[in-house]
Length: 201
Ligand code: 3PG
Image (cartoon, rainbow, N blue to C red; front, side, top):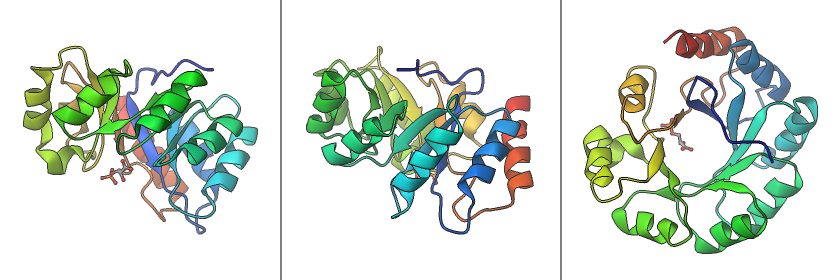
């Protein structure tokens, strides 16, 4: 199991790889843009095939699988050699399976009650979703009072205009977002440019 690190970038590109996007070219564009950690979402029929291909071609990439909504998807994720899993919500069976298999897994929360459910399993690094529609940074700050030991990866509505403000919060370890490589975007040069832009900041 690789350590879950985001290097000095702390931005997790969320990839929904549709048919018009070449998975290999997409990952190469991100790597050329100095990004070494990605989340590939399970949002289309090709997702597991793409994950399999990307895992084999890019052994050093820190490969996360997202939108995991059941244990079966987590099992397949582990079998394919992904480095971590991530979900938009909390399902305790998924958390338990990940723990039993010593697999890095990040549940998603949007309420204090969901955070409490995760703490029961000692999960202290959580996806906050959907971060902007929930109330943005002021909502995050309201949660940090009762949960000072919890860190977040806010996702949902984060983009080039607001990600730095999120990253400046003390309980934010990284932010996730689709803005670097949006769905259906196959302009690989632009993707690389947006990735480099993040590095520059
Ligand atoms: C996710 O999977 O977390 C979201 O779809 C990403 O949200 P965004 O498209 O607003 O970045």
